[in-house]
Length: 221
View 1 (cartoon, rainbow, N blue to C red):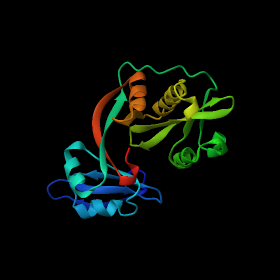
View 2 (cartoon, helix red, strand yellow):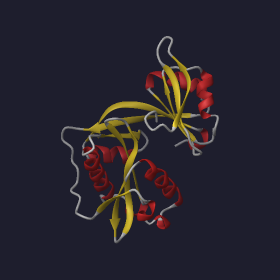
View 3 (cartoon, rainbow, N blue to C red):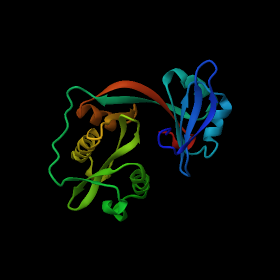
View 4 (cartoon, rainbow, N blue to C red):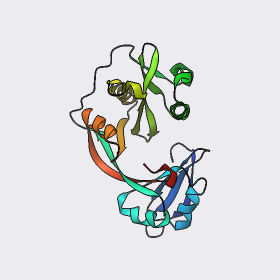
């Protein structure tokens, strides 16, 4: 968020260790990250835009501080992975996955409204790798966030095309695309998302760290 420039910083404190809340700017759900243990007013201010939808990220050691402020929100552990020394990435047949920065190229009219909205936001920040079946885009992978050397793997597949290997090919294609740009993948998945955790393991990603994701009351998993 800090690198994107599309954010604001609340409650910045330096005494006794750096603490602040960074919140993404936009009209959508709240998306924020708590660093250290900032004053509760900063945390409340970060979610005041819309308490019915959103996520707040925090490292486990500061989880209790945030939980005491965000009463009613539910915290879920998320496992962070990086690609291991022995990855298993599927072969991508030529033409089966294509990269695009245009939603129109993904036949947006055939996409479910929620996924269409997600991809509308995605193409603003990242190219999207899409797997096609009979001319229809059915699976998607893009960089949900980027740092100087890392990118966050974001994937989605139309329900009727799941468990057919399309997501794996999209991820493999995007990994190679980003590798040429000097960036390595990071895979984050909540402990309740067994499908995502299983795919990460299958492709050779290994757990390296954890976060806690707080969901707004209406967003509880």
